[in-house]
Image (cartoon, rainbow, N blue to C red; front, side, top):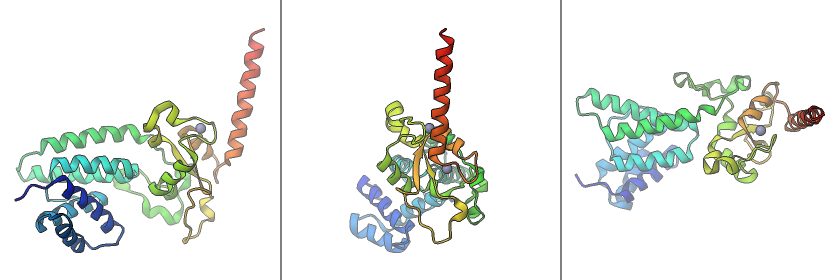
Length: 257
Ligand SMILES: [Zn+2]
Ligand SMILES: [Zn+2]
């Protein structure tokens, strides 16, 4: 069996996205991998099956190279939402369990890599979900098994999120907390994107507008916005903060007497 080169496994990922978005079938993508980057037909199929299972959160039986895992996890962790990336890690854990149950060894390097990403994911659980946003029509999105409930699909849509953050910056538009200034690049992962449109008024054909419908907010302000249903307006919460700051300023001034 020929060694898989980085060009080959990287190409496999770009074809996996095309399968995911429905542009290509798995067999067509496998054929193209053979033509494009001279991957063996068997390997091409293996890599696509594995990538597809990762994106769906399903167990897979075939093995891939550790270098490929490294590359895929890095790409996925940067481009997928936390819940989608959790699926990738879950699928790999299922695979590792399956593989070791065969008595084929334990793929230590892969296990170590998975564990390190698990730890990173545990840190990012600050992506709190607000149950008051559960609209009836979206209950299908709830991943019971994950115990991590996907509620407002619009706030979690990774593409819409990215466009919103690119436009408005990783800054809370209620309290002005600047994630990038305080935490650097990693802050972008932690900022929330709030969906300003009342979910109860949304019809099935609704398409989120990342610029007009979404706004970056810090997790604290996000939680405060959702203390009301429908969510409080950004302006109202801004005003509350201003009033409180003013009060505490006056209070401090009194205390100096
Ligand atoms: Zn804030
Ligand atoms: Zn929200």
